[in-house]
Length: 70
Image 1: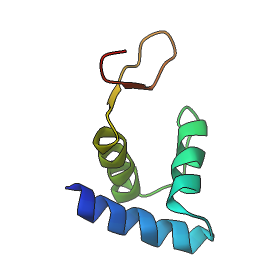
Image 2: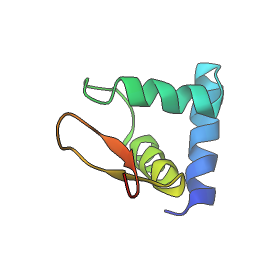
Image 3: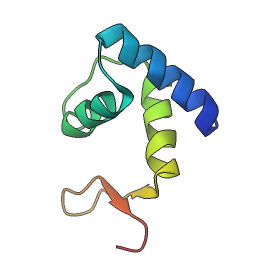
Image 4: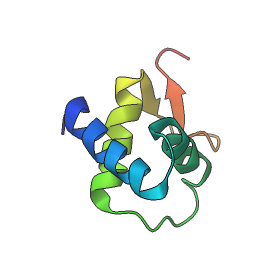
């Protein structure tokens, strides 16, 4: 999936919830450790979005997404 497809999915899901894409991503950031009832496509789109923003997955010391080079 590329960023254009990811943004389409995130925009549709954000509209479904009545929020912006930034609010949806923030909600996913906050609840990532909790079991989230989202589709695989939304979670994949979230990952593509985060990587496009310059983040990479860490998973060390309770960190999740960190900026490249930090």
